[in-house]
Each structure stands twice: as structure tokens, then as C-alpha cells.
Length: 177
Length: 136
Length: 173
Image (cartoon, rainbow over all chains, first blue to last red; front, side, top):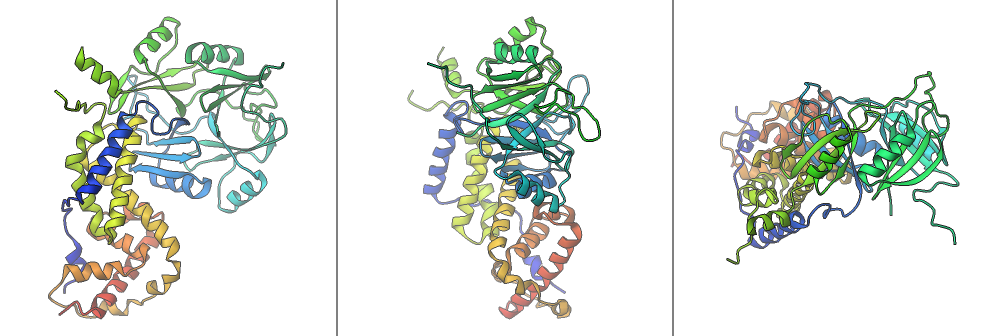
């Protein structure tokens, strides 16, 4: 008995794409690599979170919190974006950002420090996430010029959702006069 | 322009403000209460909270647990002279969790702020720097 | 002279490009069914690699690592296509009755690929990852964002659907 899937078990065969495409892509790569620090985005900020299940974590941030997955290098590393936030997910014990330190300690998820993600309607967002099984550490509380709620990602890292209120500002006020 | 907010818990908000502003070029946006401050560096908004401080995010959880500094999750800063900055910080007694690590694309190190929170410093390899090295 | 300095430390992706491009494109092309899609995903793979290197997130830049990134780009593409193809759920409802039919002896890879292209995106994704890439079911489930049980079910239906289309196409000629 034979199976059409047998015909599909082919090894990866290198294929040269058309020259115009190949040259244009190389120019883009060299332009981005030569652009110096921060040339790719020009702005933004980067945070690294440690996670225990890379694929599950990517799905959590992408499908539930609206992140875009820029790069997934399973099982060790992923790079996600939400606005100007670049979130790196690293798996402890993997080479690079997740590797053990000279004293033998290994990074781990958790802790209290966290990213704060801005949403337009905190009540609706919290209700929708709860209905999809997301675990919250707190309900909605009031902070300095914001309302906020704390939730867990699948690895136990905290994420703060906040909705700005009256008096919220992100920059120092301009000097008077 | 949108910004990125990160909250770090610190034992002493004033000491943390001095550390981040003097060493890492952060600017103070607001400091409306002894237990709360907001600093900025480019698009990064760093919120500093002292645990148990009431409004400002440092309050206890519903079960009474207080937040605390530390952990491994962190924000990253791109720097242009990693060796110089590390020397300066070491002279001031700043703790580092490792030594400078070289990898594809650049070099990095993990420091601790005065409360033990990690900050990742990354210095990318610069094509212009490589070019000038070849010519000298 | 007037040549561009080739600093592989500063431009690691460009340095690997000549060797890696045909591997990444060759991986994607038969799995995309379209040169345009394969080119888009190839470009996305390399540009994402540049961003990751600049973020200090790549400990070891290799061709195999890039193909891994390409595989996830492909899965993301299928996920987007699947959302647009929900109306083709009828294909997934083909019963397993066809599984007991005898198989033709002569197999045609071209006909098999053509049949594969007619499946729904989730079925095509599941069969490709499981049988072209040889990944275990648990890993396939991870790529597709489904449970293992749901993935097993998807694979059973996908195999049945593939057989039915293949035979309908007269693949045993």
C-alpha cells in the first residue's frame, strides 16, 4: 500500500530565486544592517521576559494582547511588537539572553517588575480577557491618573493594563512663561 | 508619539532617581509623591514605585502580598561605549550579574540598580566603527 | 581599492546571505504554492533576522536557524489564510471512508503537491509540518496553536481529504 504523502517526503532542495528579487533583498538587508544602532525602528523600547513555553507564550501575547510576532526562533527566543514596545521572549537555559550566569544562577519568569500596556477601554478589555480564561492578579484599581489591572501570562509574568485618566501625562510639563 | 511604560519596584525612590538619571541618562518626568516617580529615556517611561506606598502602584495585592524588587525580567538600553560606561559604574560600586558577553550583533552586560533590579546594556557592532578600524 | 568592506561582525546576515538564500527560498517555495508568497516570506525571514541580531537576540546565526524562522513565518501565513478560508470547512468534513480504499502504485509528486494545494490552510499546514518536515505531532500542535488531540484529528481529516482529492485528480494514471 502506497500513500500520496510518500511523494511529498522530499528533502529541502535549495532553489535560487530570481536575480532581481535576490539583489533587492540584499540591498534592504545591507541598508538595515549598516544603518547603525536603532536604525530599524529609530525609536521604541525593548523589554525581555522569560517564559517557559515559547509557542504557548507567543500565542498568548499575539492572540489575547494584540502583539505582532516579528520573529519566532523556537524553542529559545521570540521577538514581538506592540506599538513601540519590542518584547523579547527568552526561554531560561537557552543560549544568549537565557543562559546561566557565572555564579550558576539561571534566569526565571516571574517577579513584580512589569510592562504596562495602555488600552482604551479597561473595563471591556478585562471582561473580554477573563472570558477567555486569562488569570488576573488584581481587579481594576486606581493609580496615579490611571485605572489599572494586573494579569499573568502563562509563565507567571505580570502585565499591567492601564487606561489613562484625567491628569495623565508621559512627559514633563513645559516650563511656565 | 507612543511611549513604552515599564514599572520597577525600588526600596528608595530618590536613590533610584539619582542612579538612573546620573548613570543612564534618564530624565525625571514627575515625582509627585515620595513613593512614586516617572523617568524617561527616549520612548521608554520608567515608573518607579516603592512597595506599600499606596497610590502609585506599590500597594498590596488583594491577598496582602507586597510587590518587591528583583527578578529577571528587564528592559534593555542600547549604549555606544559599553566599556566606558561599565568602568564608570564599577567605580561607583554598581553590581553586575555577569561580565560583558560578546555575541552576534554586539556585546551586552546585566547590571543591578540599587534595589537589585536588572537592566540589560547592549552595545551593537557598528559598521562605521569597523570601517574606521580597518583604515587606521 | 573601491570594494565595500565585508565586515561579517557588523553585517552577519548579509555575510550569510549567499549561502542561506537558496536554502530559505527552497524550503518555502514548494510549501507556499506561489512564488510571490515564497518571496514575501523569504524577505520577511531575513529582515526579521536583521532586527533580531540588532536586538542582541541571536546567539548563533546559522542557515538552520534561518530555516526555523522561515517555518514559523510560514505557519503565521497559514494562520492568516485560514481565517480567510473558514468557508472551506466543508472540505474538512470529508469522512474517513476513503482511507480504506486501495492506493495506486505509481505516485506523482506533482499531482500530490497539486492536491495539497487544494486543501484548506490548516490541513495543508498540518500535513506539511508532519510529513514534509517530519516534525512530531506535539511540535506540529505548537506551530498551529492547537492541542495535540485537535492536531491528531486535523491530521486524520487532512489525510482523508488529500487522498480523496488525489484520486479525484486521477493521480494513479
